[in-house]
Length: 367
Ligand code: 0PR
Image (cartoon, rainbow, N blue to C red; front, side, top):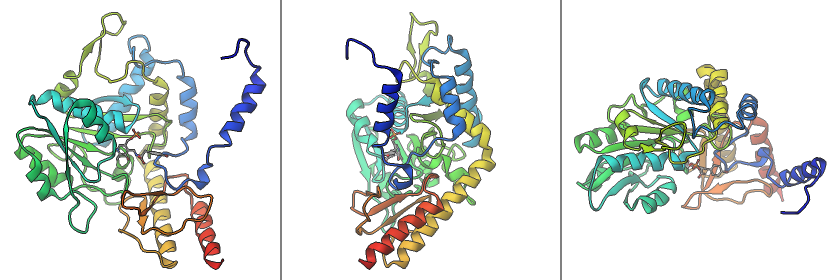
């Protein structure tokens, strides 16, 4: 840190310069985050100084968080669900598994997760001292083999996590069958809908993935992904208040006397942003956005197939995967663990962006 401060204009110019080093969204086909809705950015600015870690002091921000969770509980078919805003999918998954661990005391705890589970589960098992048991994909599919899942659950299994909108393939586990297995074995079931939570409910024919399925104990969904909120912003919802209470820690010197969240200080700003977007758009608005993303996913899939590239699966959500090929320079496209190309058709990947990408491929092919 310099002894003397720097003039505002100099800093502004510096920041703009650094911002220009970030890839423009019109070139990002690899991300599950997108440009926040304008109303989200406005709300974020308004609540920049509000700390949800001390809700008794920041009662306005706390009220917004409560309304946000109520609204999402309604969307996920459990109006009485309790929960809070997190920093994203990783923290939500961690807290869900922590709650599960409180329910079942065992010396050698394990969790059972699908092969499609996000890498956050490696961190979670490390932090919580859990064995991770991975269920392979069902033959020819990119969802968990539920038969194998049932075999891996034993008396030391504290939780099963299923994915609704997998990071690599955008696939949705068979939550109903999984919930049947976890009910029969009295095992906690978390659904990681970090990506799919703001997509599946708005599809023409949504599959059951949330609290509508009996046996689902918690669901995570991220406003900072398809919720068009600001970064960072995840939400975690529990069906049973008991699981929330199990995470309670007393905070005697604060104005608010207890916390169930992982982090202490938490941004009111991102909760306000998430609330503003979902209230502004409503289900209708999200249905339009999701329909647009799905249409663009179909267009990209058809366009790439017409070039002779081979799709790995029929897209389930706004994500399409192809066998590897040379991507034209200047485009951000990521690979799956099996080295296939993975395209995420977020709202910033508009029809124009898709056409520009396909045109670059056509040009590359001519060279
Ligand atoms: N669960 C699922 C199903 C996810 O896809 C992700 C992240 C997480 C949990 C973890 O969420 P947080 O990253 O919010 O903690 N999925 C994206 C991914 O790994 C995250 C991402 C987003 C990465 C944008 C890069 C990027 O540019 O691809």
